[in-house]
Each structure stands twice: as structure tokens, then as C-alpha cells.
Image (cartoon, rainbow, N blue to C red; front, side, top):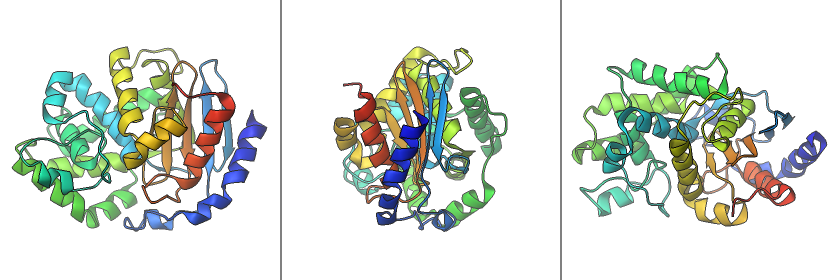
Length: 303
């Protein structure tokens, strides 16, 4: 299995040269565009890694899955989905267009930036630090990794260049979906800058694959919440390429612009991938290709 994964990494590493780093966040623009790595953790206890897996990177939009889970644990489904919808969008993850055209409604889903900021605002805590500490605590529970924190350099870089997110947070404030603009924006940017590696992502994926049980068998989240999270990953997890990804790959997955991909194959395995070079939709170009072939070889599609 390890040899097969290594062969796939080597096969698709040259493809990374066709991608582009997320250099609109300057720190992310310093990543190695040719790096590509994968970790697979199976339900029967195997952990297999290939490529450049020890490299730490930030969750970015993958954090939206974590905060959605935590917000539902804190507030319940009814309150969360009274403020954010459940529908996919064909627009980019940071689009303002739908928020303007469909004014005075709500963001279409929690996997776009506007929806994710609404979700972050629902997490319990009296300060930014309290909210982020609780997000990190959930990541620790899901992964069993104690050393989890925020990459401050990435956070500061995002904060300095968060012009579109600032616009979005003011729009959702105008729509009366959040109370505090600054707390919402800073919580969101800090959650995006939480550091992880491929193994950490694979452990989160395995927990979701096992209906909320981590690798130690502890029930971290309710099965109903795990199912809901996986459903959003299928319908909205790969930005505005989610439909094509569901057809071609068929695995619940969530990507981030740092190049990470979190994938959960129900009752089988969790997968963590990093490949910082992105395609035009903002997904890891090498990571998507690798996962597409792996799904075909191992018959992983849930459909």
C-alpha cells in the first residue's frame, strides 16, 4: 500500500507545476509548490504515509467543517440553520455576488466564507481567544494530538490582506446575522490559521468516517452531526468544483487554500493530503488528481 501511494505521489508531483500558490495571502505564497504528500488511516488501525507529509500547514477552509460541528454541538441544528443555508453554490468561496443579489436572506451554506463566519459567531465564548481555544480543543479531541495551535505568521498575513472577508463580515452584520464584526472576523481568521499535518487531517477524516469515533474508539461527536458534516463535504466541500468532484471521486472531502484536503471514506478510512499548488477553483491540483486515481483503484466512491 505504501509503495502504491508513493508511486501516485511521484506520478502527480509534476502536475503541481501547473498550479498556483495562494499568494494573495503572502505567507502561503512562500510554500513549496512541488510538495505533495498523503496519509491514509484505516479503520483497522493502519497508518500509511507517502510524500512530504511531515510538513505542517494551516487548515484554512478545512476549519469550516470543525466549526460547523462545534456550532451545532453548542447551539443545535435549528439555530445554526436558521442563519445559514444548506444549498451548494456555483460561485467562488469568497464571492460577494449572491450576498448582494439575495439581500436580507442568509449565506447559502457553511462552507463558503460568509456562511463560515456566521457559523463561527455562534461558537460559545466571551472573547476571540475563548472561541478559538474551544475550536482547538475539538481539533485535539478529533486527532488525539496535543500540540495544536495557531500559526501566528499566517494569521497576521491573512489579517493584513483580508479585504474581501472584511466586506463579507460587514454584509452579514447588516443582515443582522452576527453581533460583533471584529470578534467574528478575527475568530474566523484565527481558525483558518490552525496548524495541522497530513496525519492530523487523516485522523479527523477517520473520526468522521467512523461516525464520530476517533482512532481510540472515543465518541467525540454524535453520529448525526458526523453524517451532516460529511454531507456538506460532498455537496459543498470542494468549493465550486464540488459537483464534478462528487461525480469523479465520490468521497466526502473538504479542501483549503493552503493545499490541504481532508477526506472521509465512511467505515473505511480517513485521508489527509497536502499539495499547496492550486487549480483555478482553489483546490490542490496534485491532491485532487492523486485522490481521483486512488478512489478508482481502491473503489472508494460512496455512490
